[in-house]
Image (tube, rainbow, N blue to C red; front, side, top):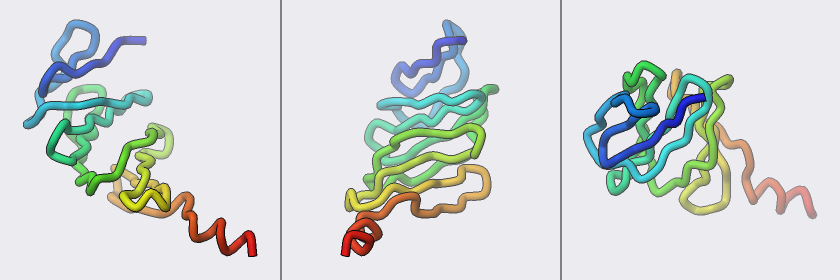
Length: 109
């Protein structure tokens, strides 16, 4: 029920400073107790918990963040080649494909 936003490198919940990250943030996604913060220039995603602690830092490699699931502890990323969507578990650092264009092309044959 609270508002979470970034101002430069600072992340706020309502009017309270939640944390300050090492670089400016260009956008964020929140789901339940987790917040994914996309760096403005550094191509990183910082995952923080509701206490403001950074629990993971992920290199973006020019991937776009599509969404987040707190229940599954996953980020959903659109791959750089735009040919697949990946699921990245920010607790155990595992990655798997959710959707690949190559799979749909093979299924149409």
